[in-house]
Image (cartoon, rainbow, N blue to C red; front, side, top):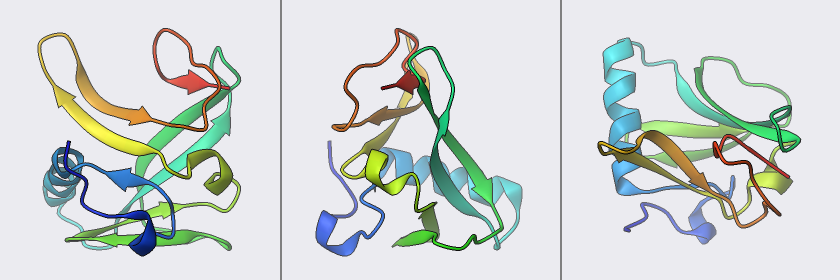
Length: 118
């Protein structure tokens, strides 16, 4: 798995694999807007206590941390940074799995669906 950024150039601490970065770029092109960035957040909820959120956002919030990629930006809010440092986002497009996946070294455990953690 090749990663597009290293920790030294990535203030959010979130790393996208090349496959995930290409998928984000393709989705942004489909949106046809140049004011959107990928927001990665952690919110209360899910069966394990916390859940991930990935969505396109045009807003900047106070305390947001931004990492630039080739053609887009990743934004993480200040409350999510401690939960996401070192997390790697990949994209799977297989018969048994499709969508973005997050490998998070900070998660103590996760549910079977992989959408929430503690």
